[in-house]
Amino acid sequence: LSIPLENYVTIDGDDLRSCHEAWKRRIDEDPANGYRDCFKVFKAAQKRFRGKFDTLKVQLATEAQGDRKNVILCDTKINGHVLANFRSKRYEVIVIGLVISQQESHRRNQNRGQEIGRFGDASPK
Image (cartoon, rainbow, N blue to C red; front, top):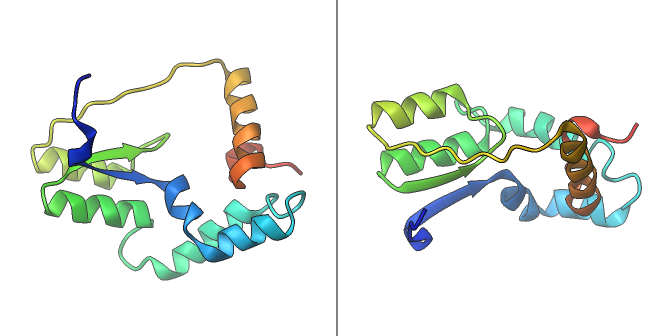
């Protein structure tokens, strides 16, 4: 695709978490164990403060849609409300997916967790 990306709003949860001081501090203070439940703690705290939106990503996507911004939404599964909004506002939706083996996905998940603290479902026990 030859799309000029400078005209897009990019919404990526990893980017958002990397700006969160408590998230960074927890990971920096205990690189071996700080990762273990950091994502679960973050998600639980986020639910208390989100109001009518499920997540900050949903809120940002909704605001971008309201302003008719071009949006790149980095996610493994899109929120149904966000997708319905894209469709109702007549956005052209282009889905780009990466097809890899489950084993490769698990390895990438482990590596990402060790780097940025988000293990997803493969969090070390």
